Length: 392
Image (tube, rainbow, N blue to C red; front, top):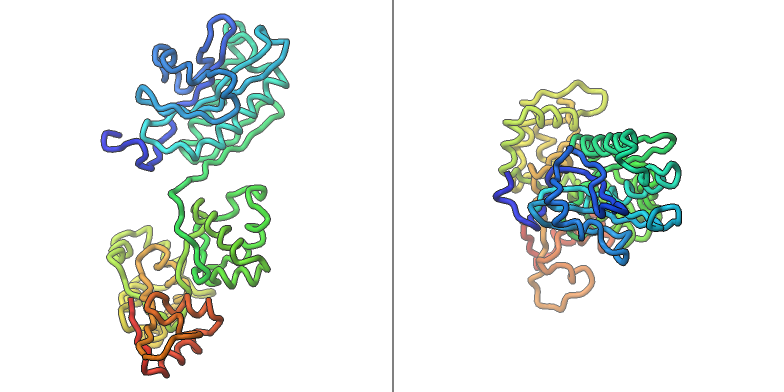
């Protein structure tokens, strides 16, 4: 299964096991309980126990060990109290993954689960009871570990309850660092923000979220939300990192798009066809015919604007919202925006707006940076014979 994967490949595998290790005052480091049962053998645990139950100097920080074909992440926790046999209790709640798996997404959960067990210990001495004399307590811990293991692998979420204590865990998929976010890009929500708890959002995100409508660019969102643009960029970048938003170009009827090889997905994937039909449905209209939608999509090509296609096909009459059609397709890579890059070829020194006519800036960027409308910018480009246009 994992022969072609390697440490650092960035892939995330399933959670293989969860175990609770403790330092027993007589036996030394032991596995108190684990799920699945007997997943990690005593021999393997003994060979790496010095990393799992480390010295006191490295307590209360996430430690990840890659050895013996396992990647083990834990949060060693040290509780000092004279009631314990050696005046302290030392335990480590660990997640076990494949050696090539990325584990950073589990670290916040490990920390929260460890704190949860600390609270249970302080409240009811759950961890310090002798496991040989209190099998009921061990079973209770094992059942919690089983629930977390099964829930996270099936849905990425888990809610565990023990007495009057409860804990909610959510795995947020952590991808590679997102590319920079620019003022002229348009964020689009790609997940239902209702699945996140309100306290997960910071103040800036709370202010920005209501203005993410899939059509307003970053600079416009900053103005509407009355938030500094650099803070909005950072906010959007963070949301993109956690795969809450995607980024698409500004929608314009004068815009030119072309289809990509991903068009085959629309033709051959029934689920995508159904999602597409619902996404592009115009308000108060019947679901359009797939043949009509596909014919409209196939018309996107170099030299043809969205306005041209609307004139030719009349999507409103077919019950198609052309704005959402373009939004859906560009986000999924089925359409690619063909940008317009002005180049000044005259002899005089460039200044003002002409500073942007170098062939390195497209009209979306120039319009947002200068405050000129698309119509005003196009007039300047069209009326100057020394300005050429590159489409790419």
